Length: 187
Image (tube, rainbow, N blue to C red; front, side, top):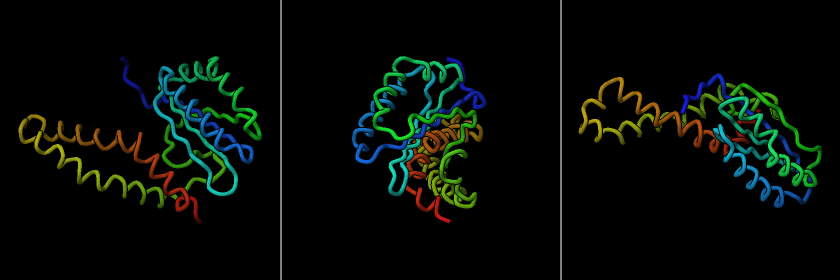
């Protein structure tokens, strides 16, 4: 398996405005659509951002390792059938945009809401990473004591950094930014 080069990561951003009263049907469809996308070759992750407020707008961010893998997903019969199924639930159709910028912790630059101020992004990132930098080394300590080669500066830092970065990027920050969306978007 080839290593994933960060510069190759490509993102599909999908915006759907759901018709009034159709949100439950849309949510059921969305679960099936996300599951289908996760089975696609090169799929790296998905985040769904629900709008705050009165309208039911959903922004779905799908990341793929390579452009051709995203192109395969977009052109697939499976996705076409899913889109045909959801169109009656939507106002304005299936709005998509492809981006090579793979940093979507906060909001995409082209989303409806403006990107949060940098200081709020820094505070939230600090509050997520700081406890992990105190906890993760302690969890590795018994193994480092048992195997001194792993406890060396390079090896230990590589393991600790990996155990912080991967969960932060793929699981923690998407959840935290969704939970803190109101604070992030408040002026």
